[in-house]
Image (cartoon, rainbow over all chains, first blue to last red; front, side, top):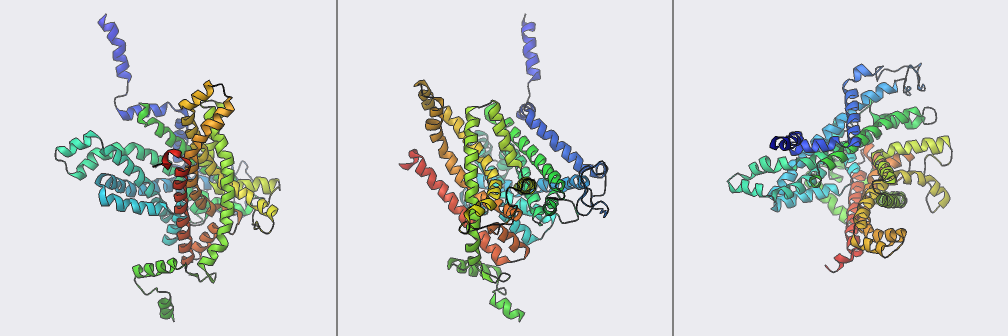
Length: 295
Length: 268
């Protein structure tokens, strides 16, 4: 009798996730909209990675006999004002956008998270100085700050990534600081201090791993914002420079030919919309999956 | 000659000294001089700012008219079809680059249907009908992302409000659902929405840069982009300073509004 009663309990125990991360993954996978967003992201990353195999034409090769051709079997998304295949440029443009999104967020997190950890853990005058610097940066609207930085550094994709990363760092600092203040009030931090650990070790070994979840959520949502920012800077001529393909610069060119070639404006914009929507869906799904109130 | 110009413009001094000199001028109302446009930057700001303010005000009104009712509907019909539709539309609004939305609207409304002009600006004082015709599309584009954010805030605040005991009491008294939602739940839900909405006013400046480029509106945003490309640094400095100042003032307004609207904070 004891074995028949114990068997279902043992089976349930074996099926239950063993760690908070496994629980979060399971909760994320139970959100079909978030999973759909993740699949779209994987699709775009694959397209960007295998662009030379997927793109039917060279994205910078011009053809004066194929200028502004409507979508057809030969050119699925049509051609632009220089006879270049739009599908090939959209495929290669994914590289610039995704790279800019990820690198900009890595720069932002690399600056913001240590600053926030330091401000939240050290407190006192260090916290005051860092918080005032962040307040000053947040006082300027994000895109205007990014434009000013990109203009100062020069129009280039790398400089655009740096400008977006530096402009986004204050948000990471705020999230990291708030999470650090919350984590530092826990008893395990007090215990770590009590046994004689130096401050830096307590911050890195005990506090930092526990502030990763909100930073992951912020990072995913920040990638979406960074992709829009890169497209915006490229649209203004401050990002990826022609003839290299970029969704933003394609939209800038498309403006001049709206009545003759409307397809030039549809496909790059649709690509930006799908990628950004997917990252927002994944970010929302992560937020729900990592919410401690759902445990 | 070059040395003389550098000395006149203080370019031969150390950077901190140049910065202090510029700050001193700013405190006296002198934002510098645009050598390209041959006008003081302060005059340029006074010329262009009203255009962006008109656009921003219209955008905010549109955002409130779309975002708040949608948020109320999403909260009242929580976890049902209308809620999913509202959330989906809100997320789509947040994910749509505003310059692409502007281009698509020009394509549909101006090129295909011919209802509105695709670009340009007519001052409100010159011809209010033409002014509305040239600014309604850019204002919608600018207000679109704000509407999505307001919808989310309103939905969240209404859900909290609708769970309160006083709402349950109002329903138990036999009041119509419309009265319960609007007169009881919404009044308290609007407190955080108004203050958070005031904070979003600052993001209008970011959006205005791109929207004014798309619709060729000679506002603040277009001025900063032109100044960046022309290396007109005094204009860039002046615009960034004025924008940051207005942003801080809007944040202060949000803090003041929060105390004014929330009676629990007035006595503190």
